[in-house]
Image 1 (cartoon, rainbow, N blue to C red):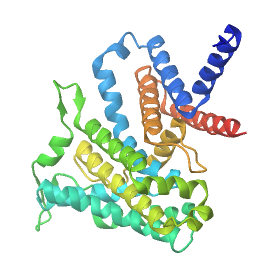
Image 2 (tube, helix red, strand yellow):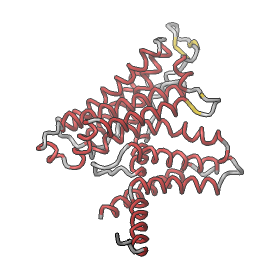
Image 3 (cartoon, rainbow, N blue to C red):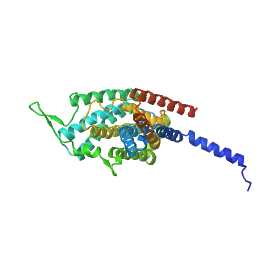
Image 4 (tube, rainbow, N blue to C red):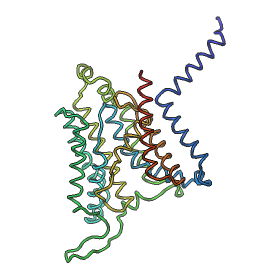
Length: 341
């Protein structure tokens, strides 16, 4: 056997390392490490080194992350869902009404809220898949409709523990057990329950994309819809179901939002869809469809979550945070384009 020259072996190793770094996962991991490095340098007098900081960073990113779980399924099909923020608000209002005003138990409130979100997703998916309306337009219409419905059902005000009585007075009731449970912490107060819910949603999305035929169908549709149809892929069913699940995840996020705020706010979730899209894109999932996955989105959730926390503990104004997030999104998309080229 002839030994491979050391120069060729070194070159091969460098090429492999370069491909790993330039891969979507490599770029997403590099972005996360860069944010963590910034946090280590600008640690706000040691605040970044406290466990509570990391716990709160994950907690604050979890609702966005749950939305990103559903958004990943849709973006893989080369679609988009602009309605998730409004659906979150609608479900938060309905959830608070059922749990606080109607005093329904959690085992009814949770599935009912998920069904509401799923129905909104089903309408968007039907408009996109069967009516052939552009995803941007279809979900924009659902965004406006869901927000309006949330305001109508709530009477334009927050659904809180102050319940209006027949004589016009208000009576304060206890916060439902469901809300207290979701807003609690476990494992010696080191992990928020809402963070565990996010991890559960991420696991479900990962299993769906990686281990089910439907997940393969989503990648095929996003890669080439016409070729998928000619190959026997049920394009309409697969794409519609992606929007349904995106709505279900928005419903779960709405439950968590209502629990954390202890009320249903019809104005909640404004621009949440943009943050969810940013998490998916920064993670490395391609907006053109056919590539990406939940593991990449999880890295994107951590990146945005820690970026927000690092900026927050260093008292960076919100205006600068928003502008910086916009710049990062552009850089992430440009990196994807240059990689494809």
